[in-house]
Image 1: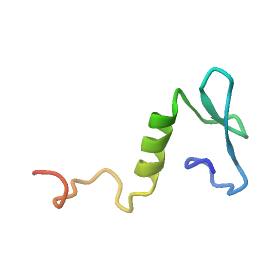
Image 2 (image 1 turned 90 degrees about the vertical axis):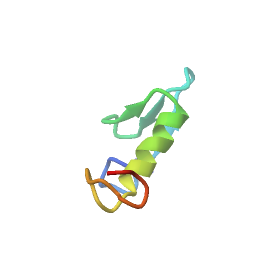
Image 3 (image 1 turned 180 degrees about the horizontal axis):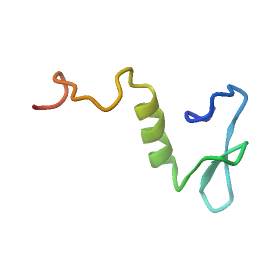
Length: 57
């Protein structure tokens, strides 16, 4: 599932060159590590704030 799309049916496919692309074609990632980081960032509940339990102020 694409972490950026609102449609839950939008799947992520790997191309022969290793690039990951969602089925709607709006989003792409150069490799699986960057895709994993995008998934991690999209799962955070608070956006663009300092989390004092993981980062120093």
